[in-house]
Length: 280
Image 1 (cartoon, rainbow, N blue to C red):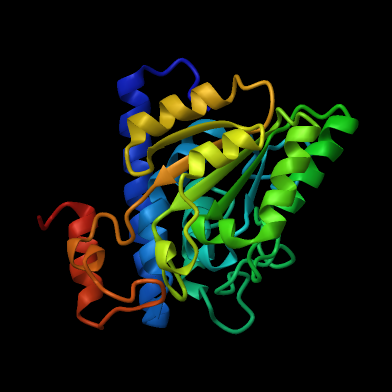
Image 2 (image 1 turned 180 degrees about the vertical axis):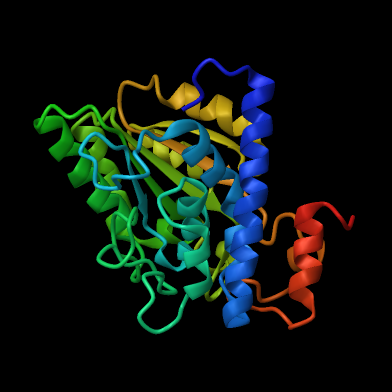
């Protein structure tokens, strides 16, 4: 959590955390030579704010009952969450080298039964918010003050189950639930607007009874303000984040077919140079 640190100190700490998350994601991506690295770079700032400044957790006890629950609905973003869990101290940075290997605790898609800190298993999209609603209800019934955060993608807004869950959250006035929507305008079958137009996203969430805020998801200062505001919401809240796939690595930001990206062998170090600031 932010504690008594000044605003500038919070921003500096989170920005550095996001840099390490990007660097560690690139290191893991190089192990496989491909993957969902563009999305990982895009959501690094969101994850850095969550794990550096927002979530209550105990690194030494990932199943601590009082922890805030962070659900990765988009299981193929696991490479990003592993980097964040290492940043939080829940995973050892050295373990990231096993990403995607046989017998690893870090499979390419998130698995709650394998990985400490991974609250749900991912795969088929559209289930995360439903699980999050159930968790938030259960925590409230038990008198547990923990919050539930669910990171989902704009592509998941295609799923009817997402909107059924949104209705239920509003009906039950779940003030302990926050959804975070990564709007990167891209999904497996092409640009999101071409697959199924979901805009105006904020208006739709508000019509479903949610407190909704939209920000640049790669702007740490804006993210801090948004999270601070949403914590005060009486009912369920949603943070709509416009992100850029490949953020921080210009040649990946411009690459076509970025949903599942192959990166050439010589490009990994070049990408790290951009993230580390040694190349501009």
